[in-house]
Image (tube, rainbow, N blue to C red; front, side):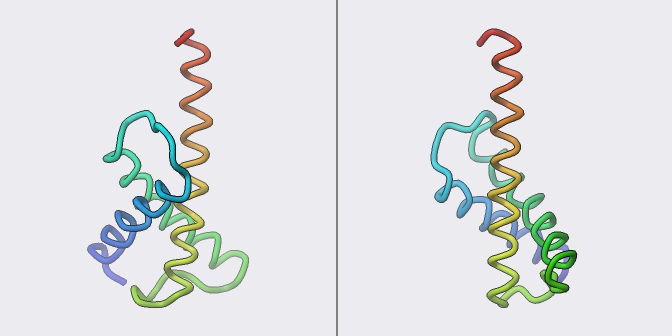
Length: 91
């Protein structure tokens, strides 16, 4: 899958991750979508490491599931880090 495919997949699964994990995110929807791109990459790494499959084909169900799982993980980590920063700042 090419770079454009990765970006499109990441943007879409970023929006899906936001639907799965609703709430107010620091940085807004743009940051959430960019985290989706990172999450798609992370999902591909996890899938390759654990199951021996990556995200090579755009229309593969495994590609989408791994990308969504990766995006949810990255969004969750981002929320934890942002919450800690707010707690330290006193906000």
